[in-house]
Image (cartoon, rainbow, N blue to C red; front, side):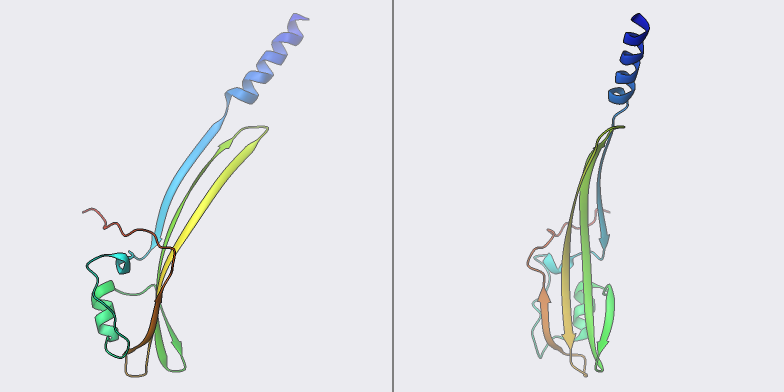
Length: 127
């Protein structure tokens, strides 16, 4: 009887005594300077590709649609965590994507642009 109780106690200690917890936060893509208060106003028919690059830096992607360039900027912020046991696991993950897309005409002037509605707040990188 004592041996069974000892085995049960050891088993319970192993199952509940070896929990694992994890949490993480990760940011990728370009810095979302389009959310900065200091970013200039982009005007359709006036602002050029050079103006956008000067204000925001190089885009994440440059796409060409019928000889018209599109600058695509992407900033991703992901965070999550979980509990990992031998018998039960639980994890939670949340990703927020912040995008800016600029459509240019063949002469390199903005035809249209759009920013994602849900944005990650702009936080300048510390130096």
